[in-house]
Length: 125
Image 1 (spheres, rainbow, N blue to C red):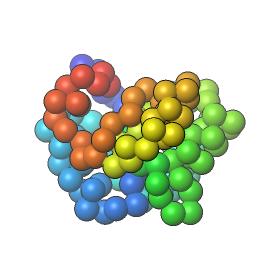
Image 2 (tube, rainbow, N blue to C red):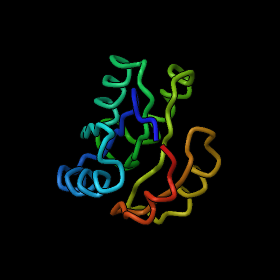
Image 3 (cartoon, rainbow, N blue to C red):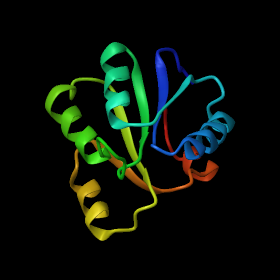
Image 4 (cartoon, rainbow, N blue to C red):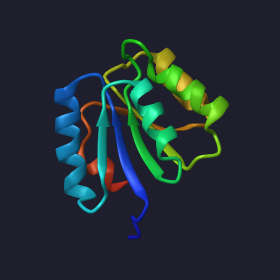
């Protein structure tokens, strides 16, 4: 698996969730760098500063300051040419969120927290 220039970006306002997800991701992708941030704004700033990378993003949608949906809107408008694989990772079982994710061209899947190894096995990086 060629992982050069690839990075996994965890976006969740809960530090403990980021820690748990980092450990789970490392079991499947030990050679891929992982960056955890606590807001959509931090994620956008990081991606903007490192546009040459290819990102596998696990994105929470209910966060203060900038929601996951706001993050996706900015990506769609300004950064759509970048190589981003976005997977919603949330505790929300709200049918409105699920529908919105299915209708978004930027979202590849809608996953429920916590991230699980068997789910990662089905994701190509």
